[in-house]
Amino acid sequence: METRTDSVDLVGDEAATNLARAALFAALVGAFAYVSFPFPLSPAPVTLQVLGVFLAGVFLGPVWGGAALVLYLLAGALGAPVFSGGSAGLGELLGPTAGYLWSYPIAAAVVGAVVHRGATLRAVDTIGVPTLVAGMAAGVVVVYTLGVFGMMAVLGLTLGEAFLQGAAVFLPAEAAKVAVAVGIVRSDAIAAA
Amino acid sequence: MTLSYVPDGSPAHRLDPRSKLAVQVGFAAAAYAYTTPRGLAALTVVAVVCLRLAGGGPRSLWAYRFALPFLVAAPVVAGATLGAPWFRVDRAVETSLASYRVLLVFVVAAAYVRSTPVRDSRAAIQRTVPGRAGAFLGVGVALVFRFLPLLRRDLATAREAVAARGGDALPVRDRMRLVAVAGINRAFGRADRLGTALSARCFAWNPTLPPLAFGRVDALALGFGVGLAVVALATVV
Image (cartoon, rainbow over all chains, first blue to last red; front, side):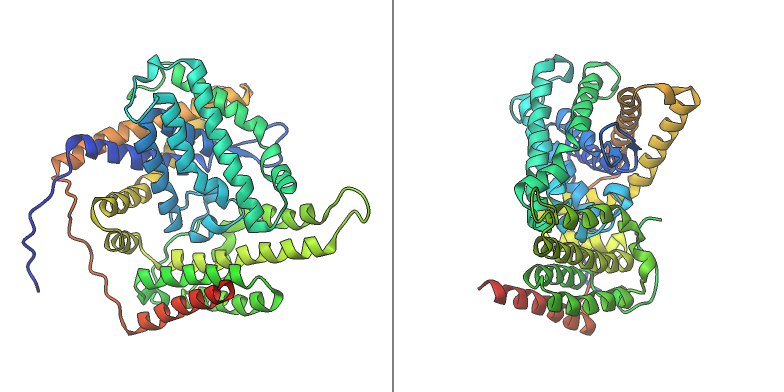
């Protein structure tokens, strides 16, 4: 039995809290995947995952928000049942919804960067509604652009077909989620932010 | 039923997680390189053998049922055309093969998930990704596994509470907001308590990990994974 004599390299208080928040947000996005609402005009029930992506960008900022969604993807790839409907495994990251999944960390970072105008966090209640809407609209564009290209690559569809099957039918629900996210951020409902 | 680790003594359970990941990556590469009827027939055999070696069966695949509508709809959408001949069989066949390929990748992924405990996955990450990035990913993934069931229960409680107060009659947007606010508040509350508790317990970047070791069977699995990847690359070069 070998004896290890490395000294302990402690994690600072702030980093520990940020790490815990990133991990909990990743788990929350996973839990949101189970919450589905029937939505008018949408062929499939709408889950709150993308709402979680927006809010990760807003509440954790571009760096930790992006990191949280990286954790989400990695945990899912290694078997946590966090993808839609409780599925898991590396296969999901190569499946028909692969483009959407890979876009989440980028989208969270983009939303965070637009909303906070850079890498340092601003107080959430000082952010104006136009900035919030612009940030989340940018997030929606990132998610659906990568999602549609993912469907084209994985299923061999053309751009028009992939857009029809993978974006057009879901966009009304996304508009509702942006409205919900703005409502959440503008209200005083979140205690710890 | 969700897909998760099942304790068992199957051959796949005895493998090192890193060699199982190599097989998955190699298999996916081969499936994308050989999306032909013959190639996929051979890979079907490989995928079924992988799942059997992990002690899994058709029941293990139930968790993937939500991907099926996408996979079934894609050939129909791809085949349909505006104007004569209305349905192009060649396009539909091409997309059916692509859909089937995805299904096979799911089967192999299910074998990994069934046969690998979280601790081993975490150790595999921290031994593969060096430094603090690896420690962050390893700890973070373990925490996601730990807190996912709690947050799911928090959200279910919130939905029940909303329903019990007649919230079912509210517009979808309000119901989404109520559930999301409850979820985020619970998550932040848990995160802040966890962060304090971690600091109090000397949370370190360099903890002691469970031992991982490649055995003789791992050489076979690793060789197989690398072989699949090489065969796949051969078609590209």
